[in-house]
Length: 180
Image (cartoon, rainbow, N blue to C red):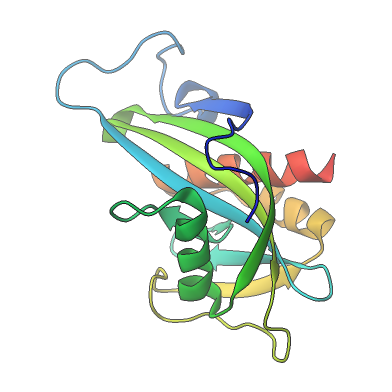
């Protein structure tokens, strides 16, 4: 286990539509009206035995993302990260540390998303983990890269979807925080 889940993760960044060029609203205003949904997710910088990072290339959106996703039911953050690595990489992982928290204000979707970043090491090293079909976006491709190359790949892509712009900005924040 990493640290006690009650430990507070450092807030690394807040991402607003305006800074992504998606809205003219400033960071102090929110969309008025309907319900605003809150979502908790986990993201992992997961290393293999060669100290390469797992990236999923989402072809239908032209971006890369880290393994991870939303919590189910009453599972803990660490349990969710373990589950997502099993689903997306078909592997077991030892979580070694946490990176921090990124908050996304997705006004167009009326969503406030809290993403908790973890670092982990693949445990079953007999074979190179491959993407499982369960829990993965269709048209995504798993690849492994050095931390520096993973950052370069993400910085070289221009996502074509609303969600992709947030995802790539968030995951770049986690990678750069670890690379420091």
